[in-house]
Image (cartoon, rainbow, N blue to C red; front, side, top):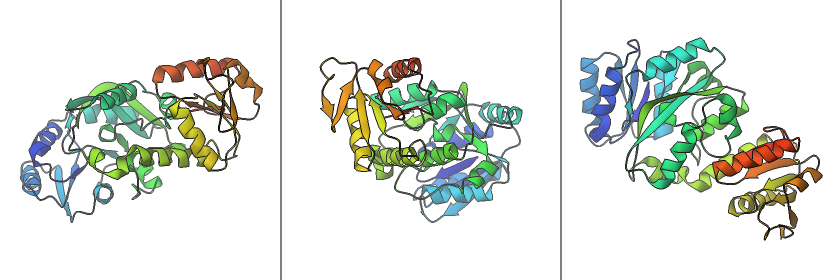
Length: 327
């Protein structure tokens, strides 16, 4: 278990208790106190005195990525799980994930469904509902450029896979989403257990709510770079499904990077026949009149993406190759 800790004394003991009672007896908790100013170090030392599986380390406040890479370097196990100091793992979490990875040698990164606790807002609730609904590899990679498809603290992955990716990277963006995007580009395989195996705490104090690296702008920059390096590497012209705010945002960003937007697709009669960024807004049926294009499903709602997928497939487009979902 890779457990970065910083000023989390209020929740750390409950987190450690949930790890001490795991049904998987043979595991280690590599806990890195990243410059805490509260009682975290004393809590970790006391836990280690009770349970030799807890291995506390100290880092002088160099940040989450440094703490994660230090924990990964010191971990001896071939499987690395993640958790934060304000989360609680179900007793069977590690055993279930280890068993699934043992039974499927081709699987590299395995999450689970999560239960929100704390004071989550409506946006976080929608995000977790969406994320809990995508379980297998194909569904996860199909929605990879919509949002981060895995709750980082729910993940167990092969240590060799993390080494292959070069560990976590320091960047002006979210380190976990960056890792999933790099894993996707390298052809690693994802999965997610359907059980709720983690209580994931949300509230105004979370790092992701206070740090610009986790802003929507930072996520969008990573998505844009991944799209350009992956599905758009051959610089195909684009047909953007969705002439609303999401589609326009992607159209402007890609036009600004030199990509040609051939058309927008929309179902709203008031938009049909208009032009956006110089491109016509056409019906779904007319989208087949733009051969050689990459089609982007650029809408915010999961149900709208499902409808676009059905319509695109009926036109002979192949999801992943000809149709990519973004948000």
